[in-house]
Image (cartoon, rainbow, N blue to C red; front, side, top):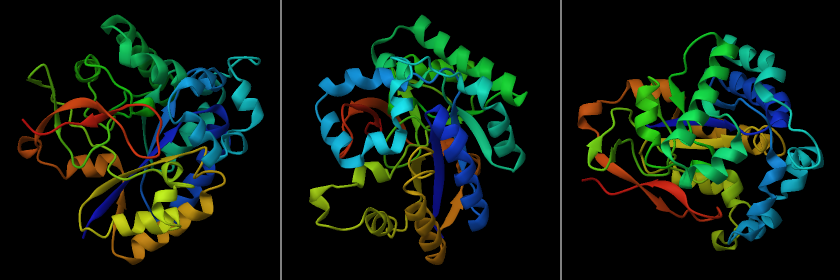
Length: 299
């Protein structure tokens, strides 16, 4: 029986306040596990406007109706409106998710700052951002984090070592095909990566190369290969307009015999000594603008 690990990236204040409770309720109805990864600092979503100059970004905006999913107010945070501090204003929502038995972890402190800055950042900048996220996580949950999923799948060579120093046990920062131990300058970092293996729903919406196939049906076809998978969803999307499609995915996956688990369950099933050792490289993913951190070939 194959497994599908559900990883929920929570990017914004609105996604935390509205999308997270909806997703938690949907998962409970299905009896499914999932890991919620929270953005814990200020919501500066409006500052993403600078991405308009990136190749493919405007195409994604047109395909996925960004304004309707995120809302005008969210798109003004950090530009014309002050960005609400998610950890301080949504702590009760986050704590409720943990009380209901869902795994919680770190997505980032400032989502836009990390996504747009980490690839070119030095170690001090990277350490500071991870420390801020860790401190806020501890304040909200009164315990240390054990997992992390990088905002926008953006990384730099300093991240894996800093994650190990923070005591993280397993992470999901990359896109790839299977779990691996990351190599940085030839050195193993003993915090296994559990990469996202499936496209996200927003990467599939409106894709002409799918020949009219519905995104949910496409995902179902991809998961009939008998392999374990990691699927990333977003509180702002699957917790909003895509909720019905996500619930259909849950029902279909369960009907086909897939176990729906969280990162902790998946990590516990792995023998780290037998995982491939792979570098983290820069690459592209169909349907997503820019470059991402991707799993390199085993060495």
